[in-house]
Length: 106
Image (tube, rainbow, N blue to C red):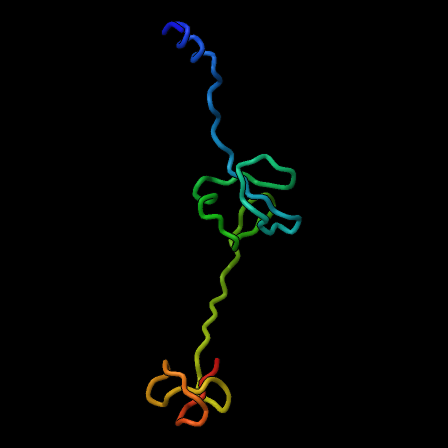
């Protein structure tokens, strides 16, 4: 093959198209999966960063991506009559009930 033939064949190749990043969702807008494939089902186009993050804490509302507000939840260990027996000097040390202890639970 001559260089001219090679470059002629190269010129005839179709240009690559930009990829389409898709978020597939159900009828309620909950995320099913992210894909670059054209699969059956409802989907919206997302940018490459959203596709890379592949967040599950979002919903599709009216064809647009919407974040679900996060509700802060803090659980704190408290001493009581029930729970795990721990050394009275160090909560990280679990002991048996026959040793001196403080019970901790959430």
